[in-house]
Amino acid sequence: MKTFLKALVLVPLALLLTVFAVANKTPVVLQLDPLGWSDQNWTLNPPLFLVLLVTLAIGVLVGGMGVWFGQMRYRRAARVHAREAARTRAELERVREEAPASRALPAVSAIH
Image (cartoon, rainbow, N blue to C red; front, side):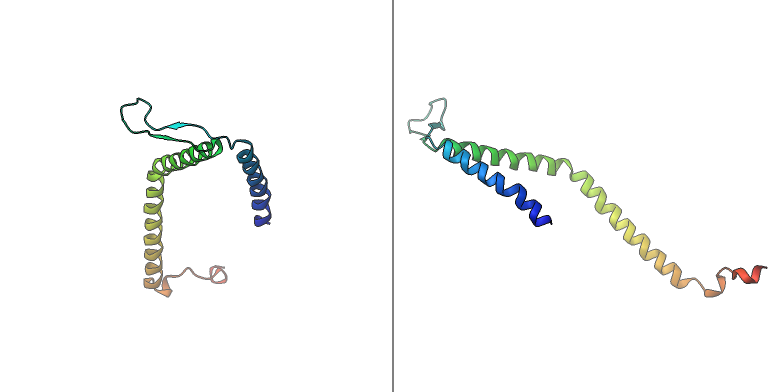
């Protein structure tokens, strides 16, 4: 089911990107030295869809890194709490093993 849903989303997205690439294959001038301070010719002529898709990919990567760094304190707190929970579980097991069986509560039938 999960694979089907993934395909249901990715196949139309791939078709949409393919149509976008075919419709926007005209080369554009990409000036890498906008102020003209260099004597060299720093221009590229990539297709428009390539410029847009690379820009989109860079934006996704930068945004993902921003979210990842922004949530770092929450991941750190989760690790600390997980260690504390494991330590508490180990201590509970140790206390259960050390507790004598005679200190157990009496059976319900013995109370009446």
